[in-house]
Image (cartoon, rainbow, N blue to C red; front, side, top):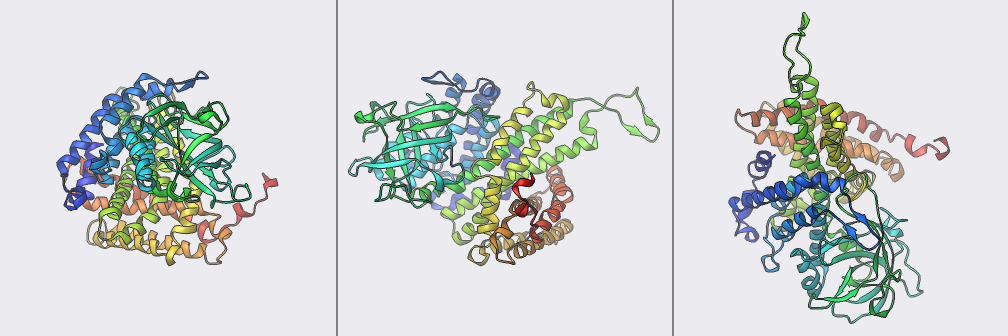
Length: 598
């Protein structure tokens, strides 16, 4: 994996060129590589050996405390001490001012080694980064800096038992208590939050929850929709303005742990706010400090959405990568079957490794194309985040990110899950046992199609908003970039693939117009997921062609990259025709079938 990562970063994306920019001027290609070396070493020594332990000794609650293996404590401490929690932050807050693309590349090692143990850090970094963008100076000093230092960890509390993706239906209530508190306008929160990863543990001395809640209107009723949603800092243990624990427990309690298929090493909680189990200040109600202005909670929460969705997609890629490497190693060693000749099989001849069978090579090539293509996608998007922050053409970077982020989250979540399934298939019966790691990778992977916006939500965002916004500007920006690659490839041996990609791009454009030709959203969006799948495959074909053009030489590495690119064009890209057919026809079946028919 490291050779591929270095190639994509430094040969394809030219990440070393970022050091000419003022923000990254103190870095070099060598310091970037040193960061990757450190991450790889910690992941190999502190995370990977305990991935199965975190799965089998999943968190349990004794009514008072949540218990986790000591290995989880040790691994997260090592991560915090590496400085990676604040990797992209300014030097003056303890950060390294790393580009997003290097930060993501470093975190890839932890996702591959143990995605569940790495979840605590990802949540904490996102929480603290949000506060750096939207918090007051004192909120940054007290909460964000202590999270970046690893003293406290953080969460994101959005969903509720009755409101998963539909955040407009949340019912957690926030009542103003003191407008003048130094840590921010102080409210009392009551309500319940569900699916809160990292919501309870004792890895750190405190947990800082970022909680979405509604401030009631003048009539005392909660405002319908998203307009009344605000964002609050709700610490598990109360702190003062000097970041000292006061000794008082906030009114936040664990109602129970959710029992998950995978990702078992990360606690996943139902949290009760303001139920009265604890009484800070002598009264019930969870103390929360307003972030930003009332009613702007979603805007603040979505501030980190690009990085969060790239992070989820990268996690999906690395789980796929772990399965690919495990099945590749197995296929090279497992003897089974003999060569077939015109005269039949010679039972006296030696068995051959299963990697010599064409169908096993097909499954390995499929995995290679999914995981290496997915890695290229996530790193490309992270590079766009750097362009948006420090580049000259921020307009184009934003346009490309707008249309690619739904793909960055959804495509690896689906196709690297398929990669994990193929890894199990390569191992055969052994793959289906808990004695080999590939079944755990599949279980851990299955979450990625759900969180940070399901496939259906990403599809609605793509077809319903991103490709039609500003008269199709984002789609046009992407098409222009794809055409640049096609123009370069048409002059090479990749001309057939370039022509194939041009046809696919035209198909996507045509289906987009036909989907919206009636102007009826219900008709256009009924087949949004097939559209997402076709769009994603077209994007990946483009990236594979672009990567292939960057490959040089006659090494096994180079031949492998070219083979994976050829595989994607030969076996994967042709699938888009069937997906786009139902989109272009505005196939009404799923929209019109009556619930009683099921």
